[in-house]
Image (tube, rainbow, N blue to C red; front, side):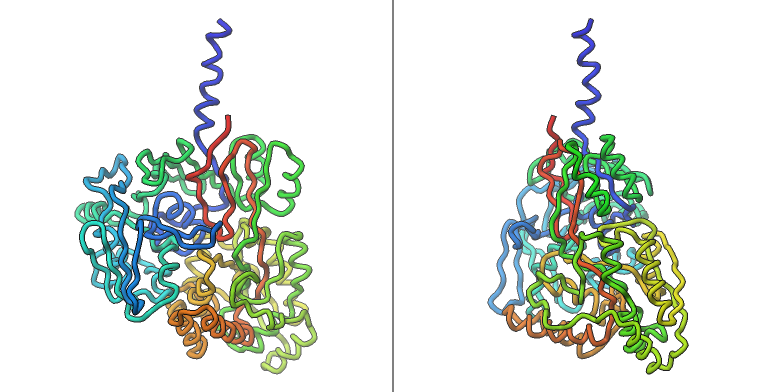
Length: 525
């Protein structure tokens, strides 16, 4: 009887070992990734459910084939021809069964819905297409057309050195035109955001807001079936609880740990600490459309009032370096000759007086309730900023707003001071500049400084039309100078990206861009 009982004892453990559970910090806003700009939503949709024509290999630092097995660019830089892999299958679920593999029609649909205001799917995204709009794709892409089932051709209005890299971003994921047609004919286009279909390594099963997202491995994934049978995002806002779940084996990977949790886990033989310098910048966005924040001297005063050294020690505890501008220091074209604003409360008071605000003013500080890689302790960070501003006469009220609501309202420009962060997708400096500082991005909502300046906008635009890195770097250095002089951000930190895993996890790597790849993860017995 003892030997007969062994399979019954171990069967549940074996079944559990085939499923990967990841403790994440927040719910996705939805699964139609083109409508959103948060990394949380990209991770839950584009990274696990979708693929793009090209992908960015963070280890090699280069673009690699995705759904397109190869591509050519015309000599004038205006025409990009992509040749698709043969036989790539879309997901089969209880709500959709594809009748054909991926074709050029799916690529055309995926981009036309973002580019063409007359497209029937364009109006389905009620908040628009923030990335496509901020990257100015409607004016850049003259046309997208199929040239047979497996070839798609993009024609641009002008050469753009960032175009291929842009196609590796999450919002450039490829959707099923057949599934979209089915939803439109049934009068339920909103289901694209709730019941996604992709070509990616995992298939969507169900979502319970603020609890979990469940996926199954895609058995027909064109790049090879994942190493686990299922994937669960266990939504756990509290970093301490994520660590506790990891220790109990309820999660095999815990994302966005606090610095203290990293230290605590370092002495635990059952847990591994994985890290890499993050290609990210944490900052406080200063809404330049709200008086008196519309005055450069006021924004400069905020920068000088803040004790960044104390902030970094208290909030990041040695796990981040100070940010002086928008770019991480390892970005080519990083303007290291530009000095950081010093911590100088007396000078901050003088600047406020020069701006006609000798007695200070009232404002608000917006932050999220739960910690993340770019903001490990939102409450403490907001309190430190509030205290430093009070010392120079600025009375700031802290408002803690749920992540999805925070993003929505900030994109509408309702904030004054906003704790935020930005992660680059592909190592290109423009990936920071266009979304965060272009005029088009004010309209799309990603420009949290709400600043539109013709000179700065032209530098950003011209930087994309030059082909050599040296020419682009010269323009981007001038752009960084304007950003510093205008004090559009209060730059905070460039964090180290950490993740904690159980010792049984194999094949997981932390991306410097914050993207998640679980397709190669395996669980050792």
